[in-house]
Image 1: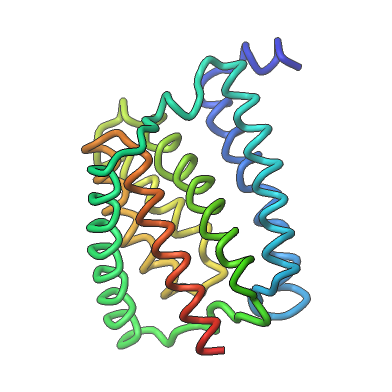
Image 2: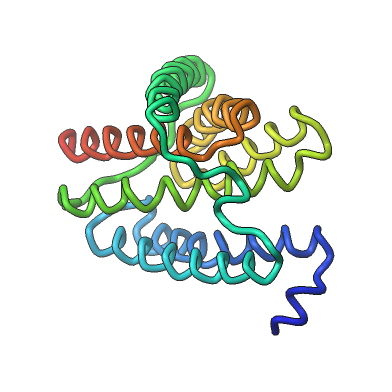
Length: 217
């Protein structure tokens, strides 16, 4: 297996990493929606997703070790500057997504989106800690780093399209808003080549968003 992975062409590695990273998780989401009609997040479903993400992350890092890359390859430096950039990135992306949702609502009726059912604060904290690192490592760092030879706009737009498509369970409007925010995330990564600002912004987005929807539910 190691020899097979080591000898993979770069495009094949790219497809393998994305399939491992998002294949099982999306099958789980589709299965959940097929049973319930909408994407309902409860403690059980959230913990199931987190277990899948940790397993997928372990496999991905194992593949990276064989292929000669790791998290540090994509820029992993925790700093106050990166934290400040992440907070500003969160604010800017939130404004862009809100404007996108308002504009899209005028021409396209929003779908059912997410349903929060009994999601507790400790599980929200776990989600907000693990999910941002997992997603930004792949949707941001790995994706853009792999496509950087094609130039900034192809790499950033491709990453944003992929990011939005993975969130179609939130409805078309929600996915489109995430695509718009993803462009800012991609540009920030291209500029600083660091994952930490993206993880901070994503952490704030997940934690505040989930706490808001939990309160509304």
